Image (cartoon, rainbow, N blue to C red; front, side, top):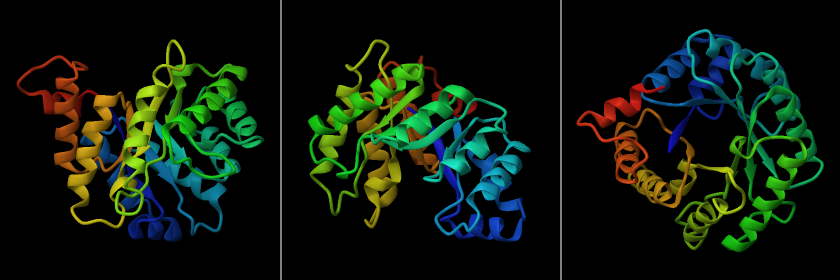
Length: 263
């Protein structure tokens, strides 16, 4: 599993203040900090309070790319903001995200094809998030079909089964894990998978423990990526260890350092 660093998000007070004042210090500090600790992508999100998501997304992309080499995941429900970011990305980014709904899929997959971007596809539609794995997988199939129709390679589609907090949606956890497993059977090559890792622990105690436990369980099911806290050393160590156990990386005594330094 590879980590998409979650910290450049306007929901955090320091990033919200950076956006408000135009001071890039906090953004760039978090960009370097996450990249140095092994993040393979950096998630860029203006947050729900942004009054100008198009210009704010452009600014966040610009100041992040001044200090970081990692590709970006442009995270917004405002597709104009995402396209503004896509236009200036130096490396092929991820579009985060699109549900299995038309015409949203049309807009997003068209952008993905134009800018050679990956897409995070959500296993939900107008009716919301399904409870069972079977329904989630059916929506994943719709996303695969849409990607294929626009010429977006399956390897550039990241299916998110959508994880709910375990204290309010405990029965969803096993269904999300089973969805991850089944998604790998939908095509050859199969689409990739991702989750918003911190969602599993929202509102709970011992959040870090819950996050890293779910991450390891997800890796065993075939989880490829997660939007997660790349600054959590214990999480990154658990991911590195799980990759060794699942034979995804070659063992060496310094496997944690190798995992963090490889990107």
